[in-house]
Amino acid sequence: MYGVRGERDMEKLKARTISKGTAKGEVLVSSDAISFYGGVDPDTGVVVEKGHVLKGKSISGKILVFPRGKGSTVGSYTLYRLKKNNVAPLAIINRECEAIVAVGAIISEIPAIDKLEKDAYETLKDGQKVTVDGNKGVLILES
Image 1 (spheres, rainbow, N blue to C red):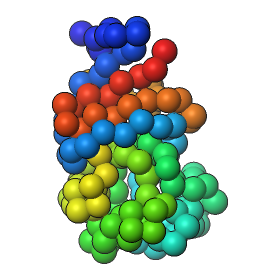
Image 2: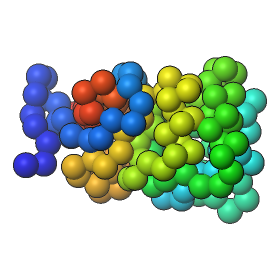
Image 3: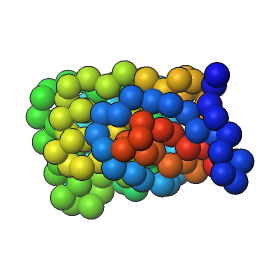
Image 4: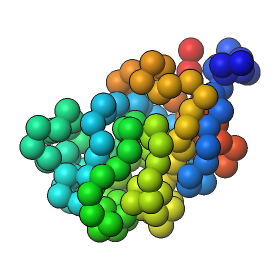
């Protein structure tokens, strides 16, 4: 079954928890993998990677959806720096999370989930309001 209708007619999608916590906000979707080290300015939260689909956009305060991380293991610490600078994403949703993003999310206390029961790229759109519940492994879509 894809999703479960709950209170106030919100759809809930099951996912795997990577990092616990909850966050509610607007979705920002990238079809490209993200390298936090060198790909995102840690002082502003703006994507700076040449040719990236999100180049020039800020990930700050967004529910960031991207297939996976890439690049240097320093990316984990760049996520931590983004959090310390108050320009980190509110939460992360991956198709399949890898170690760099997982470690970065955990040490930064950024809720993160992956392996949604319904493909995020068929379900989520920029600006859509959602809640990531990393405690329960659930994504809640507002109707």
